[in-house]
Amino acid sequence: MRDFAALICGLLADEEALHNLPFDRQEFEDGETIFERGDPGEDLYVVESGQVRIFTVDEGGRELTLNTLGPGEVFGELALLDSRPRSASAAAVGPTVLRRIDRSHLLSLIQSSPELAASLYDLLAQRTRHMTDYIERLGHWARLVAEGRYDEAMRSLQAEGQVSDRALAAVADAVRTMVQAVREREERLRREVAQLRIEIDEVKRRKSVAEITDTEYFRDLARRARELRKRM
Image (cartoon, rainbow, N blue to C red):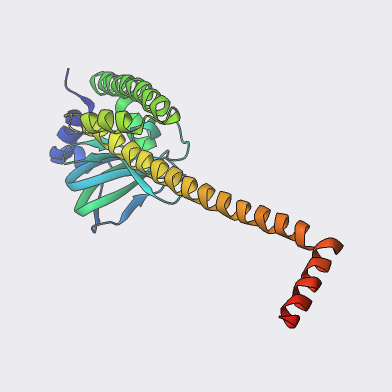
């Protein structure tokens, strides 16, 4: 069975199909946003040339790359199943050309092509299996981080970053960035706690000194000492 991306690309190469189907050709500059997380998911895209970066943004505003797609690859296929908002953002990497088709037209095409429908289901099944695998790996990395085993987590992430699965490598790289940020934040908090402890100890010392000096007995001793110095 030909895969979904190959079938779509075959349609793009078919002049008659292009004439009958509303594939829009869109050009993007380097870094230009294609869609953002939360946008309506109503279109499917095929990379004609260039690259597309799929990413999300964490609470700190850092961009985390989830995948990088090249010519002939498809993205946005989840829009075929529902019209829910995009789960991630997409941006061009270098000058990029895409072919876009909206959900309603592609659904009509799928209904008339059993081969295309079967290949789409296969694509979605593969994505689901990959996502399950990614979740298991994320759980493992999260446990290592929760236990403070940062070096072990970084070694595991480094190994995953060298695999041929670009999506997994991108996820590993994103998690590695987060682990490094967590590690740095923990070190910063440790230094701040140590400084706070010093300041608390200083406050306690001053309070203890004040409790000693702020007494009638101590003031009387100080007065006698001053008088003694004068006589001397």
